[in-house]
Image (cartoon, rainbow, N blue to C red):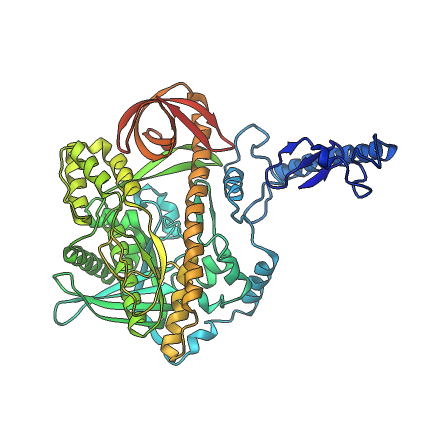
Length: 596
């Protein structure tokens, strides 16, 4: 509680609410200099002067704020991640500032939108002292894999939609990703198996345990993706340069190697560190279109010759074999939707489906994470597993399937869910994505869990695996930086750098922040979507119920694809299809309300 001398009321620091003072509070003695009581029974001149001074300060603060805001608009300048205090949520012409809306969403949930000064200084020192490979690359166990034909496949634009002149200057111009943390290559063995090699960026080579940036990585815990801006976990000097596995650059990496046979068995696993050098960077859409026979090889693919195309064919075959070997995982052919922005405006939505290139990267990633967990546990080190238990609401999933003419087994089975989704897609392709959302909602949330080497693993229900330690995105996910530290200790024969209690604290923080991140990203997306729905209040939409919590309900519409609060007096269940009316929009709070 704090005394508000100008209003004669008490104000709570946490809620900003005020209440009248009880008789017992009206007499506090000389310490309450501006309160009514035994010492001062009425306002004095000093109180009037205090109030006038407060008004002057508020006026001056508002004038400074308006001047700063106007100057920011004129210069167009912001700090790296932007702040709410220096720029308005709207541009002078009345358009919403999508980057500032996103920053506000993050700050509403206590997430960081700027790097602290000690982190900036640390990064500046790292850059200033960078001279070739980091010192960790000189360790005796580091192998030389610079002759391996690594490549990256990440986000980008289908090359046929690009300006040919731009691609002529830069064959990789259609690849948008700049923070590259995974490479892969494949080769045929004499026995017919395929040897897969995956290289992962080693952020620990630059960001040591206990350093300012290391501690900061536990704040947001992950890069945050909003419609018009990415709030990087690691500053771009590292994320997009020194630690990124950029083409034609020598980098230190954690390497996972394993062989895949025609039955999908993964064997002869190895985990080590090596110096790598990527040949090129490719994008999902272009590689998938080429594999599906819908487009020619991209300029970046052709530039590397037939050997790269053969490598990609081997990667696809290895991925298909891995799929063949799976017996109990969930496969959902879900459409991904993103908001399209142009010149700072939200102009529409773009949908895409995952192709064979996405599947290659995902299969190699999952297999690598499984191999890393097995390797460290065999070495006697604790791990931080990414787990998903069998759904506690399996009966709800059974009912959902039964309502649509399908019977799920009594025991939770991810493979059975895959079969149900295939059945539903054939029966109702238009409602497939909404059904997928319902399946995920009812199946529960993945969790981080610290596990001792002799402890029984919970496993990952959707993936159908027991061992799963996320390790392949050290630039984008804070928890992944633990892997190279554990690996280096294992290779050096040293004790684990993390105790079980430390890993448990890491896991708890990651789990808490994962919920916060999901809410912040969802709010940022809804705020931006709301800017496109402001003039559609009163319109009707077809929706599916996606969430229930007490009296709160949520639904999702398909055009545009967005989730909002649902106000209804009807009894509804997750998965129900209903007609709703858009009743209210609040852009600044990201509120999109429907009623039925």
